[in-house]
View 1: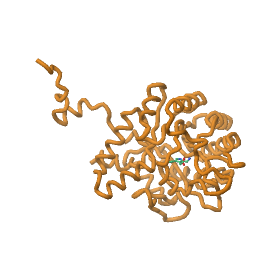
View 2: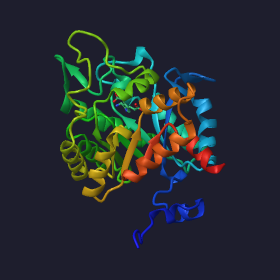
View 3: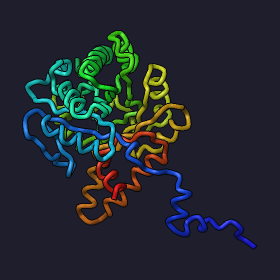
View 4: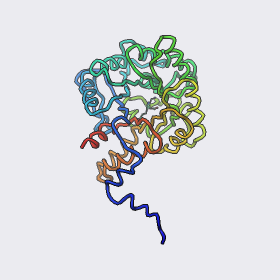
Length: 330
Ligand code: PBG
């Protein structure tokens, strides 16, 4: 008698569903992005990222303890740089007493076990809002890579465990690896934003750090000469393969949800940990829909992060990390 196999048997109740569930979300999956700002007693909500904040160093301490107590063990640091400190070459990025360097030390002071990853790119430091040095209307690749390598060494000196170059210059992974090795930071790892697309989903992040490309003559209006065209798939494999060969320890696909085909391609092509960045615009979309009562926030959030892991992500960088873990603990 047909059907002999009734697939619904495995869906009869939560007990059997949980027994055959293929993807389980846990605190260990997450990397928590943190925004840091100069000053004291500051906890500033980001307008386009409801319930997400920039912290001054004193309040960052409490936030880091809270994150650790929730079972989250890795953070990814970003800083908002004062306008007066910005220039074309990202000089402030190399300041041994800069905000990023102090942020790294602050996290390690309050929570030595916390894994600290740092964003490596020029844009928060750039007076033009670009990830590289601008010259004659172009982003100069090799001179930028030199700054990125120095920046990585500076983060390592401050105590970073991993540097995470998010700039998409060619050859930056080997440049950074050589820089770190020559300075004897053999154990400092590189999480490379390998397949990073030129995406409109980064809008809220650029609000958070005031880092959008400026509107000036001779300054490119967008990042399309270095970040990838979102129409491309094979190119993601090429980019990722090169980063692995140059020494990346972890590779990344970014943004998340619209790019899960890329995540699966990379998962099937290489044996290396893959991170996926569920970016600011993805966060903003769900928050906005939930605020209007159009989507069930927690249910959709869990479905989204589970889908990212199911696609092949080993690590999920997400502004939802705390929300997810609180939900799991309930
Ligand atoms: C900067 C950087 C960006 C993001 C992470 N690092 C923005 C950009 O490339 O313009 C985006 C993160 C997000 O949207 O959540 N190199």
